[in-house]
Length: 322
Image (tube, rainbow, N blue to C red):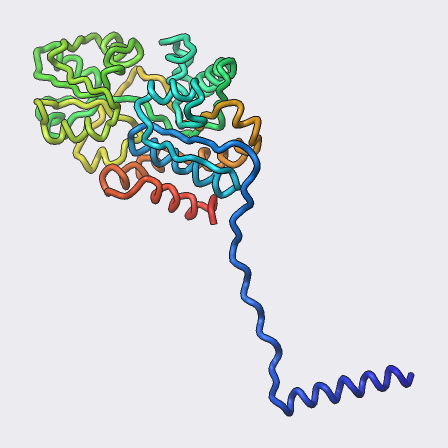
């Protein structure tokens, strides 16, 4: 009892002294700054992309998500055209890229098969077949980046062309056409030739301007400006600012092009080294609808913003990065 009484008295005396002397309770310590995750042991991941704005945006998202989870990367965005990037991936010169499910028909076949118009079957087919090449296809985005034809609003209204059926009739009636697009798409059986076959028209060589880079922003600009007489452009469904550029995308009632869902694609060795990559990237790509990609692409292609900055802002706004 004596010990307890002494302790109470001492505590009371100490409290009184603190009040008299004006001492305050110690200030709370500031919250610790978020710490950079420790770098994980394993190979650096060389992340490549195509040359267009979408490639840079999505490639940058992959880089930023991996880095935020302690996986070192090497930025190889804007690496090259689709064939260049694919060859580099197979050769191990790059470790990852963004590819499109419908392109699987050119890599593993069967080319031109209707299965590529089915997003599930197309994805499952390329995922299974490309595994034999040491390539892993991860979770795709729901956005569909298929190729379509587009004309200016003035052209559409003047010639009464808003659908592919009307465009075919215009061509077959001797209408003036100069299509600008990717040369490989023009030459491919599943590209322009598939549209010609489905709608019953044929463009002559002097009615086409084939470029090697596949950057649809340049195709759109050429049509808007009438460069070299261009009045029809190959465009992607996720291109930003089609309406702002005053272009009308011709309705494809026969669903000619395959489904092209953007997908992170890695060398299998990298996924074996970092199996967590699938879980890191899946929620990000699942959030990328056509409308989202149109807006992000617009900010880069027309707004002049940098792709990596647009990617980082999107990841932070949607809670993928702090």
